[in-house]
Image (cartoon, rainbow, N blue to C red):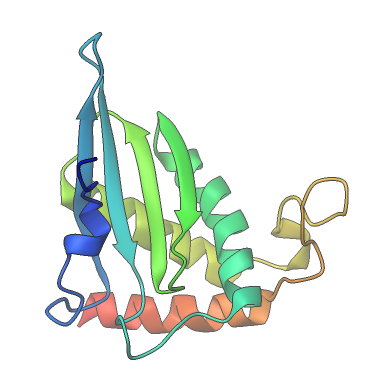
Length: 149
């Protein structure tokens, strides 16, 4: 059996400088549609990790706020290493467009209150007790500051 090549496992995590947005994979379907995966890296790999409560809240808020400004989003998923998210969408965008939407979403997170976090009940979420708006806002502040430098 051939060894499967996973793009994210080929990335040299010691040579990246977070925060950043990069194209992390592209599939062209048999019908010709493009499915693009973006790496939305918020924290420097191997130097930090987003706490699970903050990551969970960021996931719920980014899933909402990014879709408000970007069409054809398939999914926004946290990375297992807890340093960022994968954004999967139909069609390609320039990295600057994706970064602008991410920055806008992070700015909205700074203005959010507890009532703005979607899907925080046992019926809607598989771990509804593990959220931290405070933590999400603290990470958003740091990332926005780093993007502006």
